[in-house]
Image (cartoon, rainbow, N blue to C red; front, side, top):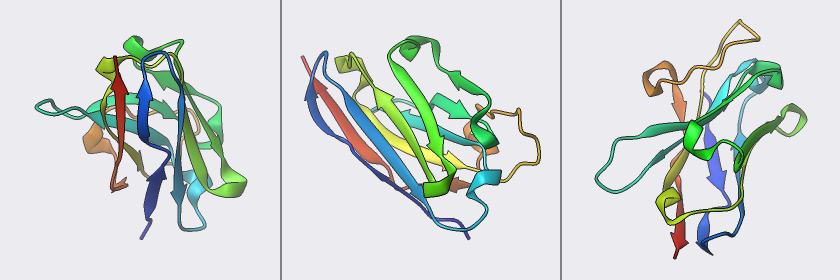
Length: 127
């Protein structure tokens, strides 16, 4: 069983930055594509950014491209989401997700493709 624990959320003014972290338990973290999703009140959960096992490929939602960067440190079993130039519309609960995969180039973008989820961390951007 893999456990994911997010941290780094908080309240920030528009234009500010936050870095989210997701620490994973288990010895096979390097075999997991990882992703960040978010869910705003009254809206469906949406994909934000994903990274393949090994980190060779990333994929970022168009609306955050150029502002958000996903990365991973397999030695620390941690995936990060660096968020810059934050906007009020980025306000949401952010979740990290992972799944075991054999392919090194695959970045799943659908929530149903992920098996493991963290509990979420709140990000609030004030205008």
